[in-house]
Image 1 (cartoon, rainbow, N blue to C red):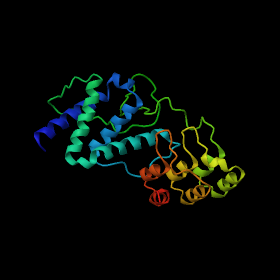
Image 2: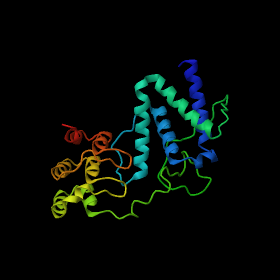
Image 3: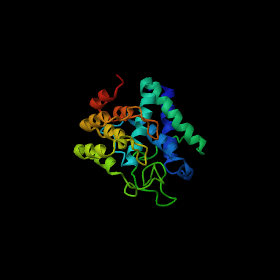
Image 4: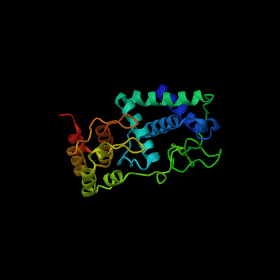
Length: 236
């Protein structure tokens, strides 16, 4: 490891230790909390998230998965320099919210910043970045607190006959959006339901429809690793 890289490693470790207990971090917007989470995961693994992307009905785990994937995509192609750039960005955020760039000479106990869970912040002493209870989506409605249209539920559960019946009753439902801005095709693509995707396309589902994050069903399928659905949704 070069002297520059070693110095960056020490700064990053000091910044992450400070962030794990900084009161000012609690007031950070969720967007920045997620960026910090994604940066931390990428820097420490030099890899992207593994496993399937969490369901859209689990918004906090899904947001963390996407945050990690976004940082991996942004920095991994730059090799060793990518890690250093990611560290610099992490340090920059810490400095912006009050870190004094104090790098201790002696090794300190490691602080586990990656084991975030999805419980809401209980009090002002909870760690806003990691190690104890924190919500990266604080203020989000509980997944059981909203009404979901039967079509969206049926698509999510891959109930093909039921979806076909609903669409025969009202063909316009194929474009119906839920409270997150997802069309039925978004849901099918994200969940990896191949036959459901084919059914929705036959009923005129819009491949170019964008959700609230400006993502199309194709993009959700790509992020989730749904290769067969990617092929179905690719432009001809």
